[in-house]
Length: 325
Image (tube, rainbow, N blue to C red; front, side, top):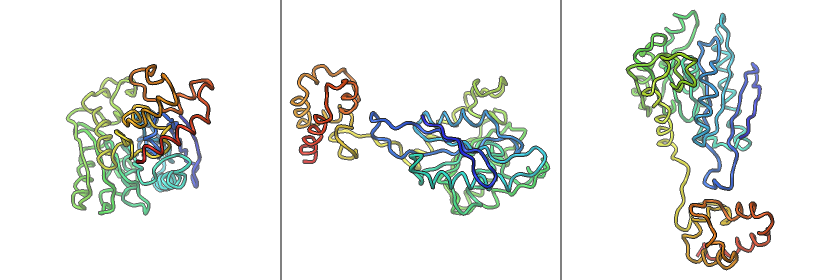
């Protein structure tokens, strides 16, 4: 995994990228979807509990993950600066998509509480928008800002048909950001005919993050197995929008790249390829461990020089002749 930390203009907001390493054992993954995370904290702080743990959860699903620590201040209204930070972060990821190895057209923004407000505003008020929104117990209404002494725009008032598809989760028991915030945004999405999915849980406190003990801060009330279902549901939502990573079978005609970089079981599904492997690598098929999913190139790397690059090139040449028939 690569971790890249950068400072964004104009406010020196911190952007941290968590980028999975490429591997020849996973040839079906090239440019990855990405999730840009805005932690909550009432625009006074950026919560650690809604930052790295969430990033690592998406990372484990094969996504690239980014955390934006946007401009905050406990006494001053920092929304305008935070909004600049949010737009700068999205531009940074899209303009450096090749460096990060992400798909610039599959970038979701996940925001929690005040970070949810920032994400919703990015999806409604910015000229450049993310491709999906994931909002956790989000602040939406301008009234919330007034109650807390901050001047905030109402994200529900800016929804149009160009707002990205949105996944929301919240709890009717939330005493800090009442459920009317989520309901107002969903109603606006419905009026604009924007695809959305909403989950309102019976129990659960504000700021529960992944709802596990590890991110609870020791607060038993923040551990909620039912509410924890929001994360896999958000993954399912994104997969419905964008599809999952491709799977290959048979001759692997849909799998791009060199044949020697594809999983060996895929090659063995073709009788002609099986004969080539058996001829060039005598006895290999008999010795191959059950369930081996490595590529021939990967096996060569473990062979400590027993399989030369020249032999791999000859194998690739012969496989191309028979696999493209």
